[in-house]
Amino acid sequence: MTMVEKQEEKVKTGKESKTKYRVFPDIYRDIDYDNQTVEVEIALPGVSKENIALKALPGWFQISASRDEIEYCGNSGWGADIVPEKTTAEYKEGLLKIHAKIRNPLDDAKTVSF
Image (cartoon, rainbow, N blue to C red; front, side, top):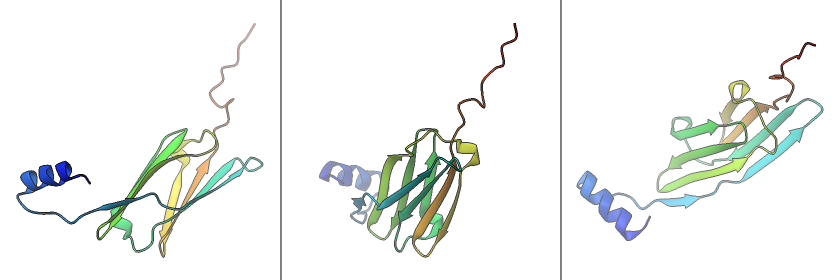
């Protein structure tokens, strides 16, 4: 957070805020083309489940999580196009596990009659 951002936050809230350190979390990705899945593990030590925000798009995801003065944040690609509606996640003991289904390109195909 720059000095300008700190000053703007002070003006908005009327008080000093804690200094935040932005950290890119450790991310492990495994793509299984045989089972059409992508498994992602993200290390978020000390973060409460309520402080995690995960957004999934077909090509990439965005993670944001905070604890004390540390904010874990980042964007990363899945490595394959996935189906966001079939994406699930679980969080336990500082490890976020995301399970995504790879999009079959023929799912949206139209059969052309002739």
